[in-house]
Length: 96
Image 1 (cartoon, rainbow, N blue to C red):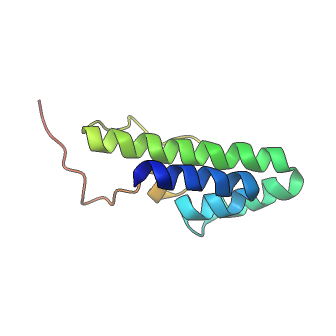
Image 2 (image 1 turned 120 degrees about the vertical axis):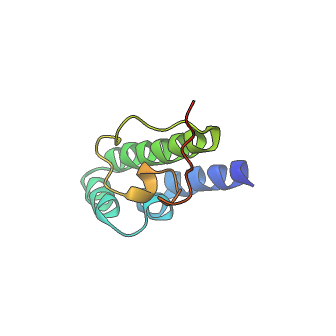
Image 3 (image 1 turned 135 degrees about the vertical axis):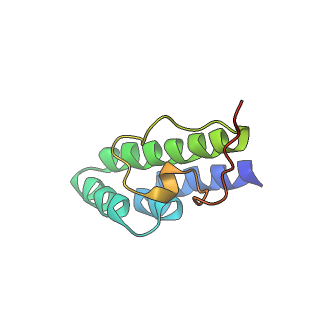
């Protein structure tokens, strides 16, 4: 299911970038920035949307492997994207 949803999200983002951002980050500052970038030029909106999706899926994979990001991703304002869709209470930190 994860691959199918990622491919569907990429197709939606190709057609209209703000919908892809809304699906990943929700309604917030990232969506507003993407709408402005899409209005300024279609390519900047795509670059921003694909960057947010990359950060989201990368952080989600890191959380599944038990690794943690060293810091926040630059230019990402959504906590949902920063944590890879994991809420703060669902990530269990292990000590080695």
